[in-house]
Length: 363
Image (cartoon, rainbow, N blue to C red; front, top):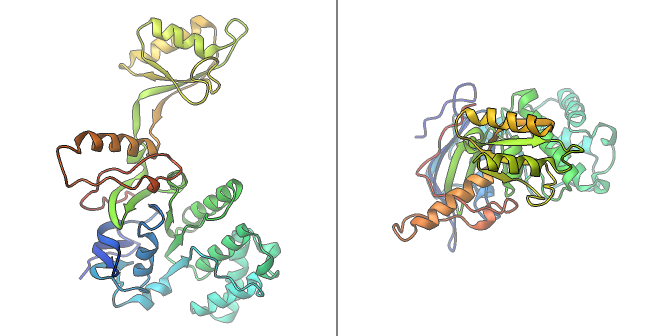
């Protein structure tokens, strides 16, 4: 039996050697991971096993082997109880076109066990939260993709769950719509204390909103770490300066001055040669004295110092670095598997080595 505590203590989801096999494909392969309260991102390429995992966690699809618990309830025997405590936003469009958002969300609230008056009140509050209050009586067939995604989020939240499972909530949205949806998802936890498991094949999205990131590929766990571990500080400083009449390209002038002092300097972003349009240099740290060298060089050049701060990794960079290490050691070991490059589709990175199990999120 899976041992798991409730959301009020340590773990909201735990899986132990969870597998799901079909005749020709293995959707999940001995997946073991713990997920604690907060916003957890589940990232993987299309077909990596994300949706399969959610169906198992909701008690809608039996696992081939292994165990899992959600909010302390066994998915194999207590699916109905889990679904009463959990909200679910499906990936695909499932909204009846001739029904208004209010009618639909009230219906879903009633299906979750709320009495009529409470269902109507909760529906109005939830549609206001997701930004659809003014459009709540319109038939959903005339809604934009972004509005439909908001309705799906509203129905997942209307019964005040302890945990919501959001399957690819930004699918089909333009950049502005993605930003708005990601903001809503973050507020689900920050404003209401509801834990969130959100899936995506876009690593950069999850980096922005998640406390913890779980990466899977081919149904296997590649990595499970807090976002802060992924984005730990590097041994370099990001330095940004202004231009002056004396030095129209202040970034280039500072680079030359620091290089002359024996400091290792790189540019970041577009224009790393020439004018360096981003005005940012990455300066390798050599102890606390590096701060003084930069300060003095900026002062001598008469430039304005916009910022000087220790740089942090992006998650994609961590995976790129790990992947390079994997390739260097491939000839020595045969039991390490690289991720499909599409796992980190927009980041242009590839996966790291599989880990035996998940690390716990410090909520």
